[in-house]
Length: 299
Image (cartoon, rainbow, N blue to C red; front, side, top):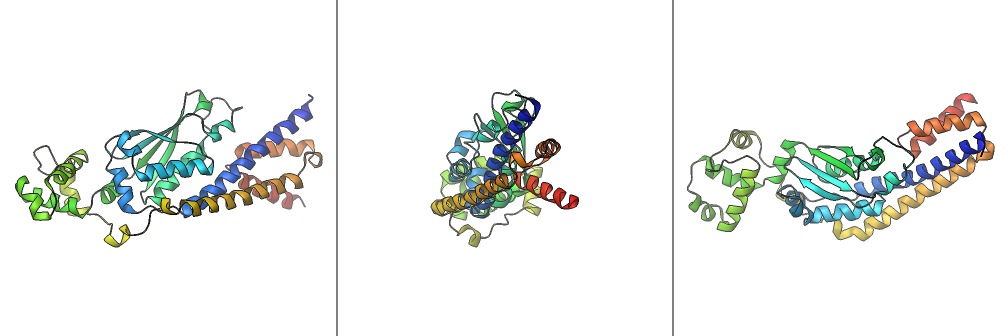
């Protein structure tokens, strides 16, 4: 295979990978727009004190199914802490698109998807980072989602928790709390453990500095009305159809562009320039935009 054939083969491979990425990006935008999660369900994830508990929540199971259907593969929670969650993926389709790249983390699109899901659908300001990647020599791709602590407190803790905090601040006897706020003793014990886990209460049930600050400035911003809308997994079939439609459109765009710029029509210099742009572009759509702009400048 001579130099030109290698360039053309490399370009074809880039187009194939970028075509798949634009399908994923289109499906992701559609999915995020349709997947707003009720605060009540988000709260269950945030109150989980271990990865095993988090895996049993409907939010996690929905997110896993959603990401898999989009084309991002199956993610698994490997660690759940108060303000961050670690996800792992052993064989995700995105890393497979970059198998010829070594020594670099390549799955930015999954990091972006996680951040978008937490910010847009869970209403938690968050940042997501790929901390390990199979293409950089690691056994698995690992992603860490850092959640804003104040947002976590204001969603995880509800009005019943606030009543308990107020009782503890006033020095109420623990045995009197259940009847005074209308809950069972078992529920009180569960909620007290959560408040200790979030460092709101000490073991002796007095307020920590964080607890005092939360009592004064925090408070849940979730209204009861916001709890009422249906979770997105009840309309998963509708979301699935939207994802399929968006992917079909992206695939048509990809094929159309490849047909309009066949390898026979591209000169050797353009092959090199387009390959370089492909490596720098964050998405297929961005690559298309750059290429069309460059063509217009040269006309």
